[in-house]
Length: 109
Image (cartoon, rainbow, N blue to C red; front, side, top):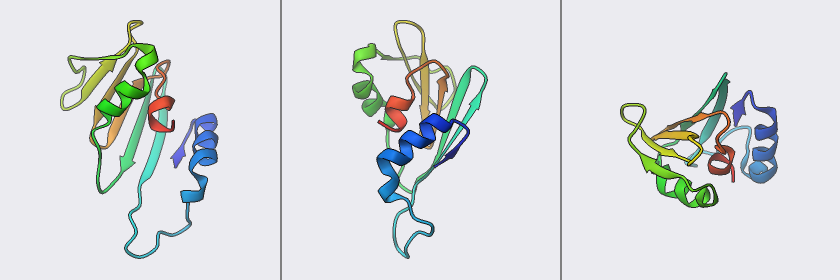
């Protein structure tokens, strides 16, 4: 886990720290996550040999926020939006979210 959001990194490590290793054992699957803030947006990138479709999980994790899938704002992404207009856009190994959207609930629940 790498990134410039210290609070999220600390929360992520607190929840998944037992999975962190200095070096991945031979034959083990490794997933890395990098979080970068860019003003009004956050970009989360994954290096994952088996990327998953994050939209169904995100809709379930954010059901209390009433997110729904909408026309994508970015080509090759799927986008969900809250009634307040907060957006998260998903590609197999990337998420681009409005900084004020509850993206942390999806990336590191």
